[in-house]
Image: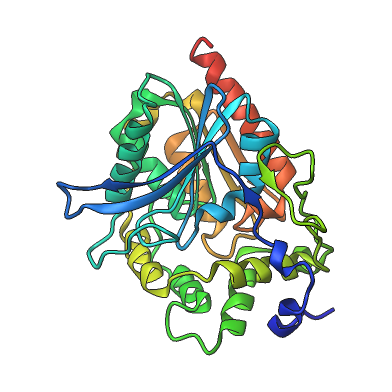
Length: 338
């Protein structure tokens, strides 16, 4: 079975419904980094108005919309229990893309300014989930504000990108270096992030419907695509990521480094029982051995190396991932006496 062409995806009646119209409870464009080379504007949304504060941090090129399966579950279907912050890192989506040196530590400081703006400043209040470069930013947040973290959930990330050529090879496939075409770029990105068998399987997305709170539903409803790949390609068509911002963020990812000593100190201050590290055995972007090293350094309360999981668990195993994150939030709340 072959992947559909982008021309075929463009013709799909489901294409206009690839991005869900989930109405946030709060949103804004916040100037940050005024004393750090800015100001620059960060676009953010909060979905849900519940007491549990969940923050989702995306990787290179990721936007608020990439988290829509989690935004739907936590911020809409369970919005009375959770308040979910999604945002565009500098260099992505609707946030500014200033020409300057990006780092994961500076991006963590951007995020903390947004969190402070929201008034989420209590001790042990923040449940943080970060994937890929977002997991690197999450590490930096934990270093800067360990006492504010209720749970720290790191997936498909690393303490330092190993100099073995693997990630650079994937960056070429991502299209950051002179892609041949948008078609090639989308297909290469999909193959780098997900197992081929999952991409070729029928679309397994759980869609919003008329009963979903605070969701604008099209006349004919949200529609399924023929395959998971077709849905992925449609979302890439609708979002169209910034190449310029992508490269600036890549600098941050390449330069991120936390030593074993720094990670052990961070884990001591956060509390190891509050930390989870998740990695897949077929992750082509950040190989599983780097995830195992992160587990070794942090000695987290929960460590998962999952057979058959790629670089994008938030899509590949959405229900499982959401339930796992819900479990981690519950644990963090209990440890915090709530």
